[in-house]
Image (cartoon, rainbow, N blue to C red; front, side):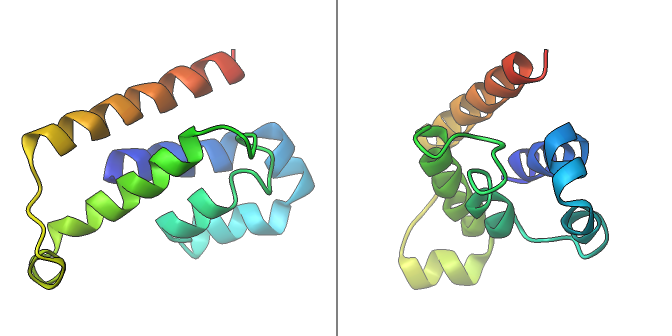
Length: 105
């Protein structure tokens, strides 16, 4: 999750369209450290990823999976992270890298 968050923060800060159209929001992401959910929920709003792209829903899943690092969340939800879930998260990271590599060539 932290890797995805770092990738998204970098994309927001360096996307030419986002920086030009939303300079104050760019500063907010940089200085206010907008949270992971904000960055995911606004990918389509700021035209960083198209709304129809299933990658957005995968990123929501990664965010939820990342929250399992907190013991209280794991206990409350009665969920234990697994190697399979970690492997899926890694696949999503690779999809995200591939997507942005092509978009920002």
